[in-house]
Amino acid sequence: MNNNFREIIALLADGKSRSGQEIGDLLNITRSAVWKIMHKLAELGIPVERNQGKGYRFTRPVQLLNKKQIWQNLSPQTQQQIPHFELVDTLGSTNDTILRMIKDKKPSGTLLLTEHQTQGRARFGRQWHSPYAANIYLALYWRFIKDTSELSGLTQAVACAVINALSKYGISELALKWPNDLYHSNKKLCSVLVDLTGESHSCTDAVIGVGLNVSMCSQYNTIDQPWTDLNTITGQFTDRNELSRSLITDLYATLAQFDKEGFAPFVDQWASNDYLLNKPLAAFNTQEKISGTGMGLGSRGELLIETASGIVPFSNGSVRLQTP
Image (cartoon, rainbow, N blue to C red; front, side, top):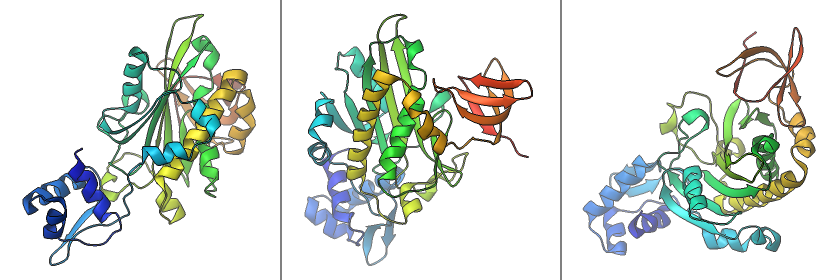
């Protein structure tokens, strides 16, 4: 996105109306160019309102991420864990971009943030809707000196890190839905996507992606499941730069702990926020379907399901609640 886009966002970030002529004069561009930019911003998910005689305004606060501010507010300990940090305006997918960075020999600990994804993805190739300058789209690279089989529970540990970061904002009633989602009041707030590459009995490269809804807008009412965002939950504007700092801090601390101790230290935390605990559910993948009651997680992050024949561990697939 060119500088004119970012400058217009900065001009209208306060929510006040400005005419196309005023904006054009300030940026030395035509009113027609202003109109085209406004149209594009609306397509990207920024709610632009045009009132005759008043001009353009944003109907919600819009804040751009600031790499320098995020970095300076990280602790020295966290900064030492991040040898390479990029903030990109627009890209396809944060996870896919980090995977390419790994091929380009970027070091473990590399961190990536973006304002907008054009091909954001969730599990099983599903789309993750990514409006511009609205949410947190983050990915990082962590190399484990472990086989992939030793990383069971990594996704769940990362989800616990997100809960830790959000708890600092006084948000209650957050729930963890196995294997990778955070819910609030039965609506999805955040999702974790982990991609692993490696050879058996060797090192494993992990790409950890987090998509966190901060300030979504009504144009995404076509999403096929209930969702919410932080601004809706709190009724307040969420500072995305401060939220990014908090999230980064907890993610890197969690990965360091997981690297040493695995998922076991996170079992109790998951249990206290378990969305599926004691609820009827169906777990399924291409090989099997298991119906029963959620009984928490095992020490390797596996979902424990109570069935008629006893407790059954489930490690890979999807889960949905059963309607009584």
